Length: 392
Ligand SMILES: *Cc1c(COP(=O)(O)O)cnc(C)c1O
Image (cartoon, rainbow, N blue to C red; front, side, top):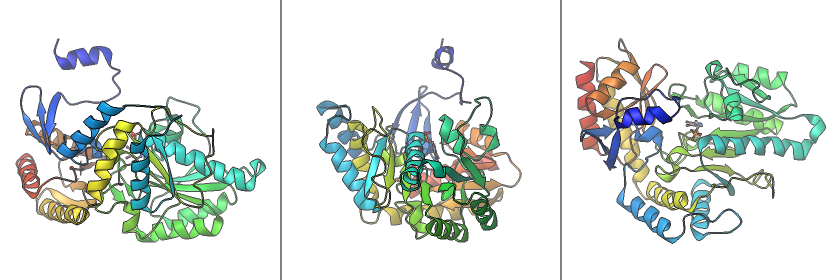
């Protein structure tokens, strides 16, 4: 039996996978078991932010493995303190919670928001509704599935967690109507600044302004799910900075530690002490190996000029994509781009790219590109050459 057959024999078939076995990677190139090379425009769904096996990242992670790999959260480690300090200093948040995934970071945010209202308004107020957006994606656990505003995810697993109400993205009338309908019962509004899995759809400034104005007036927490958009992906450290906002809570995961599992829930002064001793936890949360990787990612992404380069590459890639005759338009921010095609199916194009040596993604009907933040102009050109050939 080959690798794919052995894999499928014992792994649940929850994913539609391509027939490709990846064996190694270096910077922005992956190598398959049969020795073929692939330019990476997907970074493992936005996780390998520094590319494959960045040398500084490898050194930090390996050194950590050799010194101490895990301690439990009964003890302290320096590498965790370094990470938390760096993350809070660079983002302006006052405290964070360590998890291992996007869903776990969002679970933390949801618990925090409900407890914030519980502590302040009491149990009888039942101020526990969280407004999320139609077409959002917040994760695969029972509660983050409930939070996800897409009906396709609300099947089979009944009963789902109660207390989520959906508002149409970029519809301020709908937002105000729902806030009025559930007046006094809403504890948070949770949203992605750029809906990722939903099709790379940025929120409008007007809608974001309305969320923040209404939440301020009504003492409702704002929760930004920056699991995909965070840590440089959109050309700013946080996507919220494009909108001039500082949400009460921001969740991070995917690109945060350069490809090892991590999740973080950041909170501002207003709510950073809500989750008190014993109210939340995670055995692996803040794993030192993940933190060591995360320290390198934060150092590099916040270094002088790094994000300016990301923006330049973004502009270049957008311009070149727009010149292709099959391309109807390009949506997104920074290196999180969704390409609308005129006639071809994104899934077919994505598969054809793979066959020709380019790792790409799709989001709904769009072709989606999340290249490593360290990709070079030369590598962008190589990827575009493959795409051009596929679209001909
Ligand atoms: C990927 C993603 C999640 C889920 O992250 P996991 O690490 O798979 O749990 C949540 N929210 C957004 C916006 C995402 O893109």
